Length: 121
Image (cartoon, rainbow, N blue to C red; front, side, top):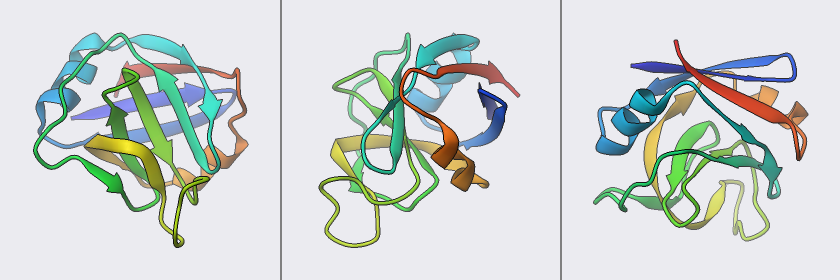
């Protein structure tokens, strides 16, 4: 299961895990959102709502694709956030881990307000 994220010339492939939230995102595609940034994290609202899953985490590796249940948003951390205590991204709240992005460093070029399109890959 894969999704393709496109934003202002950046194309990122997301390898999805086999989770209820990942399946819901795949079923909802295609959809679009407007990027927000929080430190070295890009996030944007989705049409999906999900409950917190048993393996939800707040501290993740860069390139982990997360679903923020409190904001119905995809969170794409690629480095430190304002609340990180080391080099790893620390999300605002525990989030469902839905997948990974290999070339996550391209997220650095996405700015607040940029339109992000999500499609099935």
